[in-house]
Image 1 (cartoon, rainbow, N blue to C red):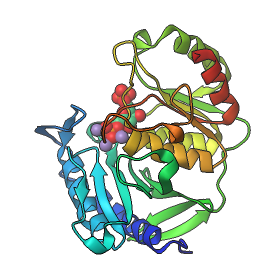
Image 2 (cartoon, rainbow, N blue to C red):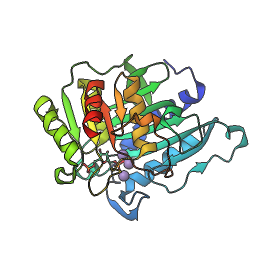
Image 3 (tube, rainbow, N blue to C red):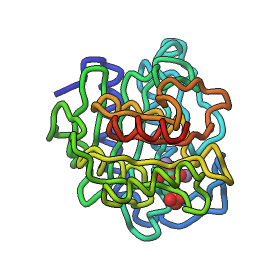
Image 4 (cartoon, protein in one colour):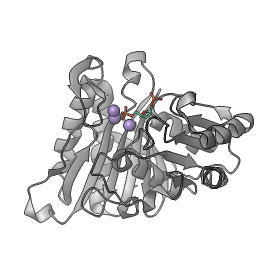
Length: 289
Ligand code: AHG
Ligand code: MN
Ligand code: MN
Ligand code: MN
């Protein structure tokens, strides 16, 4: 089952193939290097390696004009005039890479935009994440549908079609330290704690995949010490918001859908991120306003 848009299909095929290699290449690349990424985070060897691998391969696709990632300061242009008007890709090469130390789940996120970067989530034409769990899976959202795949040996096999969030939510996970939460968010979280089960693993992709599987809410809120939160709009908020909205849920920055946010602070702009079942996000927005 291929994707009807040939450029999106090429991105998805490249991601599927690369994910198997990334997974295998993590061995021996778990250590921190003496570098920080543009968000001020310590990089591990695997962050830089996965970024370079994906940049080279995604920029080689005809019809991809720009590549940007969490791990590099500047947007890279393909330098090929034939592709110059094409789609752009924004990538989180390894989501939750600090989990490499404790050998817990991680992901890779790719957003495909039909606009120059930085772009609005509404300009996405597809988004996918790979989850490196006990097995490697990929969730792909296109304008048509959301599908889940298993990835082995560079091949992808579809295991679920038309994925939607279950109606009855079960799990929640919120990032940041509780004393650093705002009073309004703390009040909301206190209520949610009595209704749902906690699932928080330190990699958004792992936590979001629990929300997709069981229903619920994942959030990384704006903090007292950092009102813009931790997660990045282009590489994390937008693609995950797109996938969750395609799967029948909602995304929000606390006020509005992430997909409607106009980027204003460059490619590494941060944003509070909330995704999950519509009634839970609606309630959150009411309580934060
Ligand atoms: P990344 O590894 O791409 O920088 O992302 C880490 C993010 C996200 O995956 C996760 O939800 C969050 O950081 C965890 O942060 P805390 O360690 O503050 O809980
Ligand atoms: Mn990081
Ligand atoms: Mn991330
Ligand atoms: Mn990352």
